Image (cartoon, rainbow, N blue to C red; front, side, top):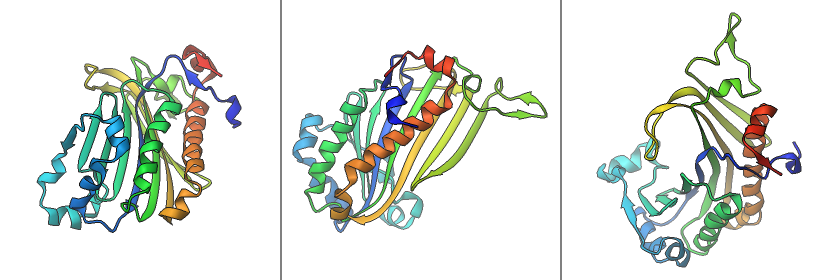
Length: 249
């Protein structure tokens, strides 16, 4: 799909959270990572109060955290400032925009500016993977009725039932992980429990390159992930439903 044909934004924005994640290898010991980042200029800019939350994983013994492969990409600390967060672990840096989506230009500028400062340090030795994820919540909506997706069992449509769908779509070096939760109970800090639907798209790109080689094209790769996410999201929506969301081109 031509990027020019995709909406620039939709007024009835369903985005509940967006996450950008970078997985890496480092030569620094785990206990030095937070100290290395703590006084970074851009972190002070975006997180002036330096509100750092230590996450529950730190309650586990260090030996378990290091030896369990399921824990190697978990985050240990989180900086917070209203709707923006930055989370760090021994092999991962993740940025999040929650609740009030600020738009791709501001959102990507936020994490790219911090990453460029991080790349000047000796923290990242090798980049393993990039991920861009968008979680879209549609309140009181049976989303399967609104999508170009047909599911039925012996002729009976599943649209009216609580239904979970997951698939992985390979696309020129990017894996698009699509999760659709149709008319399930959704609860968050700002929402009481209610029936809603969720379209969750996570676009993943394996890198496996040293820092300098990665930096030669990393902005292009970030934009490619964003385009693939938008292409899949808008490609799912029926035209009349997209019109209800008030797209702007």
